Image (cartoon, rainbow, N blue to C red):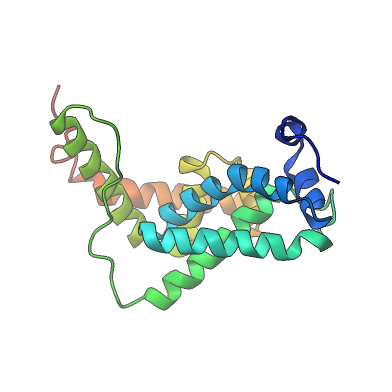
Length: 194
């Protein structure tokens, strides 16, 4: 049974997944429009590589489609499940990548502000990504989910399958490590200028 597109935009993620599991392709399209950007964003922040993030987000969405027929509503929030899958896949890739080293994160494309602003913002993003890449995987995961994705500590605890206190500890240690790594770069990153 197909639902009107307007009805799909108001449906919850979980309801859309159940509809897809029951054969509704419009529900899949609607859910993909909602969740694929989230998966890509987290993957990119974890990996620092656009192509790898695209591959990983597609893998996460494929896993979502595979579990659709068996999804049990009310047990977990769909976005929490997806965060967990994406961060686990990213952690696995980072483990395999160890030793290869990430020379430089690609600069994100943006609009057409002043060239100096673009250069400063790109340098800041690259410096942050380089610092994130140097964090231990669990600290990186907690910092990305909390400070870049805006999840609450209880949501992160559920994604990472740890207690809230552990999330707070990982996040605090990660923030301190990032601050220490970036402290000597303030002026180079344009923070010393008015």
